[in-house]
Image 1: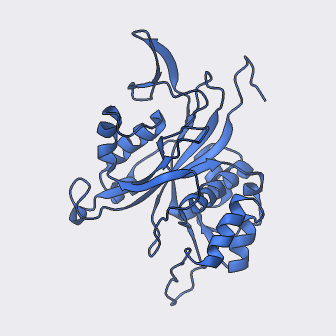
Image 2: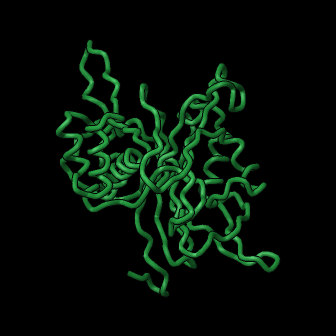
Length: 281
């Protein structure tokens, strides 16, 4: 439904910056100094949204993401509502969408068995055939995320997520999203897999290299991804990400003409090319 003035109403969405310690000294400082990498996926060129762009795993909120029966630990939906600046129902849906979409697109699941005193944590093997049936069932909506976790006796670990930012697609775009960005560290024992048909490449990347690669035209991506990777690079380490102070306020980039070209102006004042029609954060 259009907003006042004819602009398309933005659809709520969630995306996750999946992080891990750097391997082989790839990031600044080397593994010994706690450097990190972020997971980026390159969308296939046949996609209607952001074809060929590097993105974080994520997607739109589904109606069932707001299910109040979802097994859950960590900050409550009420606490998340205060952090994210939403009502409780939307906060629950955004956290669920972040975890569900990450699992659907990478096979990484931010969930576990409930913690029990004196018992070691069990590493999830989400690469099994049974888990793959669940993952595909979530994608075609024949299974609910609440049902998948409940049947396996698992809980969504909301404490593994860190709210980072919120971007709204400019009004000039025909397809718009109101996207909450989260950071999360790769759970022990899990690894992302090349699954699904939306991406043709999945790669761990030093966030400090993203902006130079984007400027050189080797890593096409939308402005929020470039800006967010630059923010991660400023944190330098996983500990830096944990300690970063973030105020989650909605930001809709300014679209203006600069030297005869239409540009998107990010919060830090940096100008980016306007994405192709239909693209969104």
